[in-house]
Amino acid sequence: MKKILIALAAAFCLGSFNASADLTDLLKGIGSAASSEGAQSTAASGLEGLVKGLLSNSKITEKDLVGSWKYSGPAVAFQGGNFLEKAGGAAAAGVIADKIAPYYKKVGIDKMTCVFNDDKTFEFKLNRVTLKGTYEVANAKNPDGAFWFNFTVGRIPIGKMKGHVEKQINTMTLTFDASKLITLVSTIAKVSGQSSLQAMSNLLNQYDGLNCGFELAKTK
Image (cartoon, rainbow, N blue to C red; front, side, top):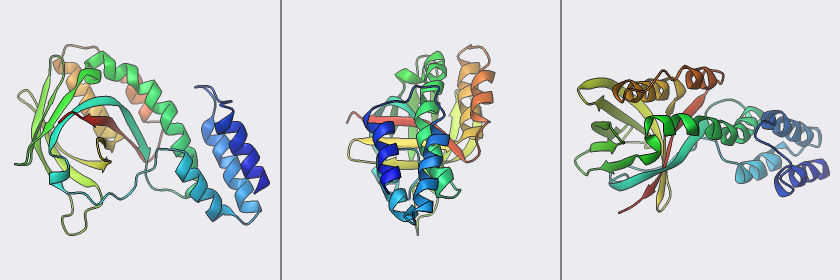
C-alpha cells in the first residue's frame, strides 16, 4: 500500500503530469502495485474516487433531464474492461477531453444550449445549426442512465443513438459511443460549412469502449 500512496502523492498532489504524459501506463502501474500487495480492491476504490472517466449506473428518468442547459465542456468516459483498464481509461479521459475541445469549438458546440421538454422532445442550438428530436429512457423497468436520442439536423435525419446520462444537482453529462459522436459532430460540421473533422475521428478511433459527449450546466 505504501507504493500506492507514494505514486498517488507524486501523480495527483504534486501535479507532475503534463498533457502529453502517458497517464494510462502510470495508473496501470499503480494498479499492479496494489495487486502485488493483495490490496487491489482498496486501490480500486481509492482511484475511482480520485479520477473521472468511468461510466456508472444512474437511476434517472426522462423528467430528470427536463429544463434548460448550456455546454460547459467535453465529456469523456470508458466502459467495460477490468479494473486496470478502467483506471487507465479514467486518467486518459481528461487528456482526450482536452484534445477534442478545439474540434467542438470549431463547429460551435462550445456555444451550445439545450432544452429538454417534458413531452420527451429536445432542441440543441449551436451558432448556425439546430439539432432537434426526441428522447426516452432505454429501459424504464431498470433505468441505468441509458437513453435513446433520435436526432435531426435541419432536415437531415441522423438517426437513433443510444447515449448515457449522468446527472448531479445542476450538472449533467451526455455521452455516446465514439463512433456515434463522430457521426453527430461530422454532420454538424457539414451543415455549418466546416471542413472535415478527420483528425478528431482518427483520435477517437484509437480507443475501445470510448464514450464522448458533453458536460452541461443547468440554466433554469
